[in-house]
Length: 193
Image (cartoon, rainbow, N blue to C red; front, side):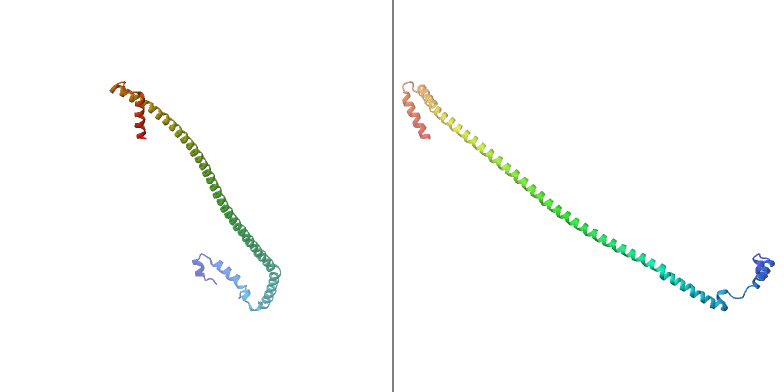
């Protein structure tokens, strides 16, 4: 009940307070769920409602939820199996790639070695050809040099004899014969050789 002093402090008039009190006098005294006279009917409807809710949950909602959970678990298991399969394939592909790469490197090294060997063989053949050509040229040059040397030595004999004759003529005079001069030059040359 609202006192008149409370109503005045909150701006309500006595008429409003009286109307409220009149309305409250016609109502029962207890809150209906706590009224002991309605407990039996409340318990009856509670049991029916709980039974109906239990039946609906066990026959409709829970099977659907179980089906959804089972499908989800199956999908997760399938996805995990697919991921594992793809991982295995990826690992196999990586292993095959690494093996192919190693084989390619080995093949490249073999090709490079073959190329080096081929170039070395070509260079050796070219060097041998050039050396034989140079040996031939040296032999030809030595032959020409020996010919020139022989010719020069023959000419030297003649020049030496002519020079000796000219020197003897100037020093002694023409009295010495050419045969004596040649014998003296030949003797001197044989002593040197």
